[in-house]
Length: 220
Image 1 (cartoon, rainbow, N blue to C red):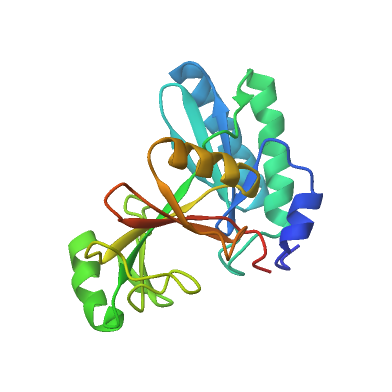
Image 2 (tube, rainbow, N blue to C red):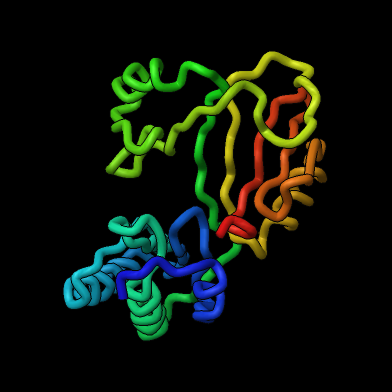
């Protein structure tokens, strides 16, 4: 129950309502109103207490977002799979429809060789904590911040046309990455590299600012 599952094992679980995104499995349930959302959250809370395994939940007027992971192993375990199935059952009972389109997790990268020296400043600024070489907000209000050597975004990429120190790592489900890429290109973006795909694609906006579309594929 506590062994970390591989990408293939997570995929084989067949969780139609859920997607694997950056070390978590995520689901969105369309409730249509706040009362239905509250009812679903209440059922999720009871199930989590029974399982002694607790998800992150975001409740807004039209939907409930649920994120599951096992922090003790830094990934997904059978506990997450079992609780995900239970949550999907509760969602069906209250009439909340699963919608996997657009599930996203954002990380922000700082291109610098001085990340460890700068980390205390950004931890203080953002109210985050330094953990395993990254800045993490335990409350989930601020995206994770990490750093890398300048412009180390992929094999044989040329220097950017514009000065840039920050970039977005946008994590999406593996089965949605190419659709997200098409939307970016249709919106005026440029594909700079797909050499590391399907792990990530490097894209740029019309002024040359770079970001990455990332998935868990080919990362085991």
